Every structure is written in C-alpha cells, then in structure tokens.
Image (cartoon, rainbow, N blue to C red; front, side, top):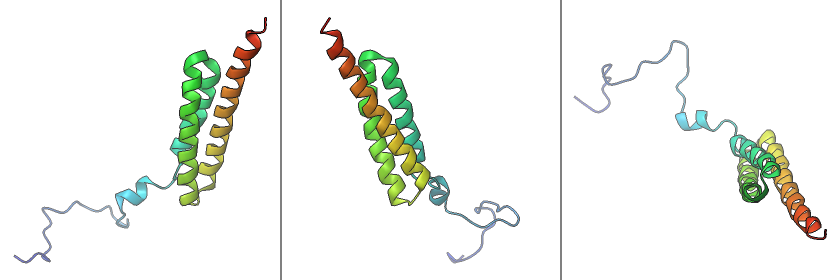
Length: 107
C-alpha cells in the first residue's frame, strides 16, 4: 500500500460542506485579546488589595505589554485597545497605592 493511498479508517470524518482548517489558525483568531483582558482584571484587582495589589498591578503591566505586542503583530485593534487600558489601570493602581502610603505616613 503506497503512502498516497486513501485509508478511510484512519482519517477523521469531515463535516459536510466545511473547509479543512488548521487548528492553530482557528485558535489564534483574536491575538492578544485574552492576555489584554487579564491585564485589565489584574489592574482592577490592584485597586482592591493593598500589598498583593501592587504585585497584581506589576503582573498587569507585564500582561498588557504582552497583549499589546501580540495585538500589534496580528493587527488586531481590540487586543491593542484592551492592552492599553490594562496597562493604564495597572499603572494607576500602583500610583494610587504609593500615594496612599506616602500621604498616610504624614499624619
């Protein structure tokens, strides 16, 4: 049996009327969006927890940069916008907690 032979027992059945797609291409239709949304979540968590919020905000900045790079590489505008929002929230959270600690120490 030659390698080019058609063997119906080893092939997966195709859906009627559907094109064969690459699973990697289907998985990455929205580059950077998931990471960027996690960045937004980390920035919001940064406001709620005093010490762990600083760590979450640093992680949010890192995730936002990753999401921005992935969105820019894939030319996906929602991923880029969410990444910028996540970076902004994370930086704002760090500024908030640093200023809260500094102004509290003056009392």
